[in-house]
Image (cartoon, rainbow, N blue to C red):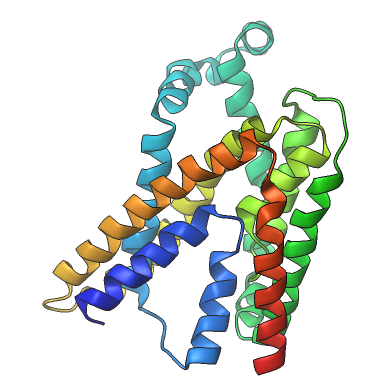
Length: 269
């Protein structure tokens, strides 16, 4: 992989990680239709860390506030219960922990099935159409706005677990479920992106263990750096763009793209 390819792939990774169009779906269909090889484990580690950094920068104030409240989680139950009631940052931390559990369970117990799914471009194309339908149906939501709660954030966590399958957009499914359950659009997007932190970090750790075994080839460092920089920039811009889209309630704008891409995939495969 040369620097030009790394820049292009970095941009695609950053955009599709946060836009509701499924980065894994693009990866599987792209490899099949264009007959290209995976960029390699080193590139995946670097771009995952770059997109993680994009989330940390975009939501640095929220993350700083949550970290200040983190140690309240370790307090005795009576004190914690009072802190939970009065401190929104503690509640947000609890919601993220609870919503992360489904993806952890699915990743641990269905690892073989998930890996097999990445070898099935036909199912991936169908999943992209499913993502498009999920996004399109947000056009018809007419529910009273509700705050984040254990119930609706857990449902968003279930959506994130489902999105481990290629073609199902993580951001698209989690934000959509948030909207379906009454969460305001920008708040649903904010929680979805904060929820991506443990997911992306977990993927980077798993891939990093593999990278330690194979190492980085000589002369590859500069290429990886360019790819990571572009993934960070495009990822950060995608986050800001999505927040603006959700303020206007236009998540369904992405539905035609996902449905059309899935249909093209089915036709060409």
